[in-house]
Image 1: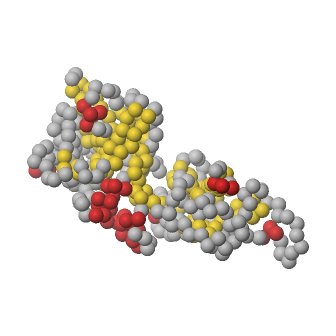
Image 2: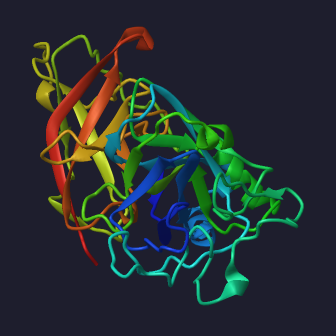
Image 3: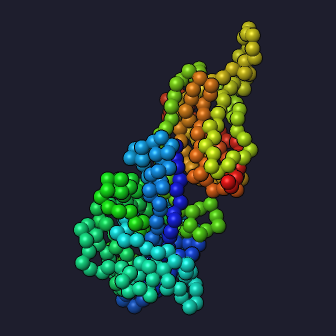
Length: 363
């Protein structure tokens, strides 16, 4: 299973505009501007409600400590990015107020998080610390003091080479720190390395969609666990033959609060003629173990949940099945279910798109 959890707060903080708040911008940005001999960087702050994430998993009957966690962010725009670069994610050591500003506001909004302040420029006591940090806490800047403070005991990273692909960063080590009580979770900071920030290498702008986007591409934490169960009661279908895949219970729409169990039946398109009391077209089979599903937008190739070891089908005496937790989906949108079935020996796969489309409705 893959559960998706969206941020409660996010913002970009800019070293060049040290008191500017951007809490309502539709995009989040990692950039660097070089002015004379000085480098000015930006960093991304995000917060998620981890107690709610943990409670959701527990309420489903699972242990949050057994899940893997990934931070996913979707690239909206990239300009003058180096061929090779890395992004780093740390847990923030202090909380922040998202604010209601936008980058282009004039006069600029200073009520909310910025490079210099956690909450507002009207309260000097909420300035980010620039010294006398607690244990395992640090900060850094290139030109202007500030830029957040974070724990050094846990870090996640993702490296890129000749690509500007979406962020899909394994942050399990950070979540394990929360679970063990090593630190209090105040959110995440996403930045380049200190060396990259201080260098003269061009890094004009890498923008991701924010929580305030009007698309499906919100930042998200994916909690992942292999919950597949296989009784292997039904006979195994020969995937080298022509087969039909049908869903016997897929509805056209589901409430976002529902958890439907979608059954998928495999049958031979041309069953062998035999003497029998029932039609061979009604015989039921199971798909090979390791068959995976993906969720796409209904009418495009935009991937919502990709094939992985965490999207395996289960099977029982009735059929194969998938259990979906739709509170992880954006409501009032249509989705498409696609299968990837391994061939003999699992050395290759066939992808089946049978136009299994459903809508998630609000409420």
